[in-house]
Image (cartoon, rainbow, N blue to C red):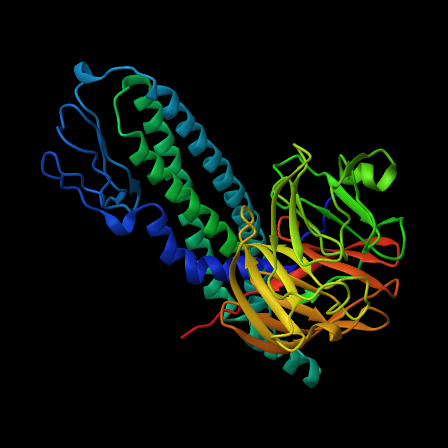
Length: 483
């Protein structure tokens, strides 16, 4: 089963993020903002250029990436004399580092495929736009008979679409930067391979830090490309009909490619068993599953699976538990200070839904309410390893008045109810600590939603609707502003 593709909104999102952000950020990602080719004095480490210490004859030097006259990325490596090279145990470390860079290359290939796919759509769109402009001019020049109302409508539509043409041109140019980025990492992989063959004495920690920094920036780049403002939710796609009226189901957004396991949790309390299906197809067509027994019953339907672990709220408490599926053990527990529990600040449908855990492009979140915030929603960003609160935001929206909620790109979206006619009507943006009232229709097909969560990998909403497991496609849009 494959999740429906995003509509034009996500294409515009990718276009705009590349146009307005990547052209500024990519140079720093590949080191173009810190070019310096002068070696440090002997014995003095030059951290800005990556020059490794001491005697040039006995060490190696790596300079930050530069740009030649034709705009191509260049990475300079100065190796010691081959007579000074020696093989030692660090060769194994270098090989591990090489594998890490190769993993980064796979991430860049994913980014490249996404960009190229959107670029093909943009190119087809550009042809259609130019064809529409040409036909319109022909009609205007030949003075063919047209109904006045239709003529004006076509002209207005053309004027609306005309500004898109230069934007498309910019997008095609910026897409080339992604290819340059891909080539840069390919060059780095080649350099590391040569070093692995020829060298054994080197400053492994320095190189490791440089690669880790590049990996972190690449992850941030991919997150920004995926983000946008929610503008639409598709009609629901029913995947399966099973279980009670309440429950939750999900996939792991950090699962590797090819891993499409589905996790299924029936009920909202007094249950400890999580079903694991090997694929979405198995989930849809069979009852073949593996059962995991949790050490404590969960509370509500706000559980998430993230990077191989399940995060859940322990029943009748404000304790968050991280349970590792591989080891079948608790890897971390933490308490959300002052968070209401035991049906004190639940969603409007009840069900011990006081604490709702969520995942988006930025990581792990907890949504709850406190007495200190008068029962209004509190949003906390959590460290997925330690479960410690990184930062919290207080909102003015009563938790008990919310039907359900989900996070996309750091924005909390809240529905106005859980039964009957439903819409997304409130959004709180953590990046600016501001809120707004919106109006996004949301089809509540089976009239009772007890779970609604966003998966950033699938870019879809997972819902439990009155014993039906349902998917919704989302449309994300990034506003293009021109001076």
